[in-house]
Length: 280
Image (tube, rainbow, N blue to C red; front, top):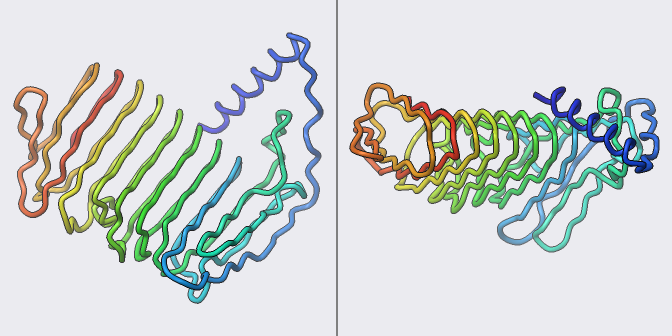
């Protein structure tokens, strides 16, 4: 996925040169620098944590025992050194002063954050560009979660139940490959997923603790929704969807699909410009 994205960026660069636009040479990578990251938990109530990341690899998992964030950042361009700003209960960790004024040699650029998050209740926002990510939020206490990224390759998992009631889980992405696993463990009231042209898999495995509303809106895409046996779900399809495949446990009535089960109801509204929807 990412090599194709970078090839597209290279084509844009050549087009700009053909039009007489001057592009400065890319930054020259130096030796790898690995920096320890340790951000204390702010005093007070709920924490707002914002992570601003560009190109590279971002890994998040539980495990910061006494800190809000603990881990390492590895980079080979000095301006990729992370900036950390705190104020009150808000913390922002950003990719630093590096600005994409030109088209960097992504094959040579190294930017890797490997971070553990603490158990303090937090409102978490991740803003990223063309990157790879591996997220495990199991056992954390997220009150809200927002992910906004561009062309990306992401796997996000709630491996165990979220320890707080989450108001909104929002994921906005571009032309990406995104897998969201264990979503029932997120314990949200509302989930909003918006995507462009891509391949998306939303797996609602886990423990459904309360009724929830899920809105999914994508462009030309392949979308797979996984609802385990015994989960109570109702799904309405809107838009110019071209193909729907439903597995065992789903029944159809017009544009509405029902999944037989007990317990809290998951209500889905799905809008796809064109593409394929697989209900499992």
